[in-house]
Amino acid sequence: MIEVIKEECIGCSKCVPACPVAAIAMKDETAVIDLDKCTLCSACVSVCPTNAIIIRKSEKSITDLSDYEGVLIFAEQKESKIEPVTYEILGKARELADKLSTDVSAALFGHELSEKEINKLFHYGADNVYLVSDPLVKNFVAESYTQAMVQLVQELKPEIILSGATAIGRSFIPRVAVELETGLTADCTGLEIDEEKRELLQTRPAFGGNIMATIRTSNYRPQMATVRHKVMDPIEKDENRKGEIVEFKVDFDKSKILSQFIQSVKDETQTVKITEADIIVAGGRGLKDPKNFDLLRKLAKKLGAAIGASRAAVDADWIEYSHQVGQTGKTVKPKVYIACGISGAIQHLVGMRSSDLIIAINKDEKAPIFDVCDIGVVGDLFEVVPELIKNLK
Image 1 (cartoon, helix red, strand yellow):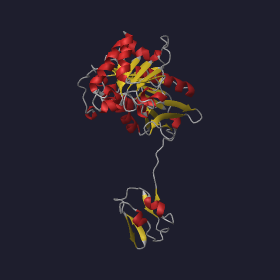
Image 2 (cartoon, rainbow, N blue to C red):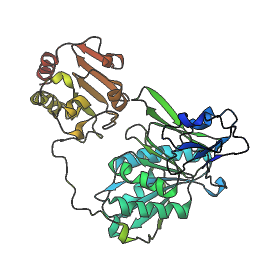
Image 3 (cartoon, rainbow, N blue to C red):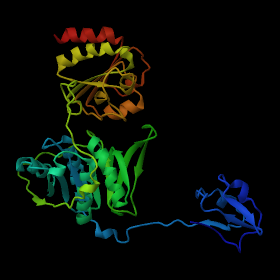
Image 4 (cartoon, one colour):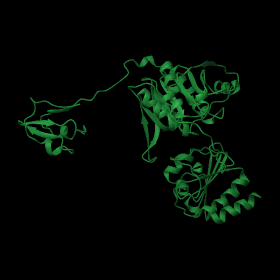
């Protein structure tokens, strides 16, 4: 809300030309603001010599943060199988919860899920599993998943919510944050606890990966974050760990479920799932032509590897987006990452620099990829890769 304090206004009219939307006029030597035009940009506030113009902003904050306790993770499943990213998040959740002396709960949505699959969540660190078993959440639909998560959170009141930054997590977790009127930090690569303030420190790349920003949610609960696949490590599996399965009933409003699950189409171009692969052979602009990915496929077949690509190769329509590694693609953590004809832009490095061993093949000896690789081969990939395939035989 913006207001002019008439007693303070001296009629200098400096605010009139300062307003970018012409919302201010002088009347009886006093500034008058057209509230229908005003955008609350505060340009007038900064030029007023007597501080006669003020903007009052209402700030909403949960009055008692102590009502919220515990760490809740979203346990993603596809075709009734828990996705690997869930175990990575559980490992970090376990670490955070131990620092807060609280428990870890998992929200699992599906229908007719096996008890064996559910128990895996306990083996990797969960204390409780809140199971929503309903045909409406058998397959992912954003509206039904959002309703289920919101109602569960309103019941449990966790202080922290974590989810994978997957296609599913990115689709519905922001909707949950909006419904709960709280903040969300997306694509986190680091999570820590400020134990004194009991706040989650959420670290993510910003400005194209050139800086790392650490974000707090000081006045709102729950504190929500999505986490990139392959940046956290699961804890060691313990099949002796037990926990409690709690069936949670959701009162679905079907009138607000506007989407419908039709079918799931598998990517037939990838024989090895890129996010799970131990070895990845990736190509970039240096391949020069889409048909040259066949050379990398020959190498990948010899190694039992997955095929990756830089954004430049994907944007050129040389290969499908599902192969893209980097800030706007997949985050991977293989044992071996072979980069062929990839210069090493920071956006690509964000997605693969945590690989155990990075091998770079590039004819430009000044390419940034050589600053992060473990083994660098300065040479023409069209000579190096065939020689490598030949030696692998």
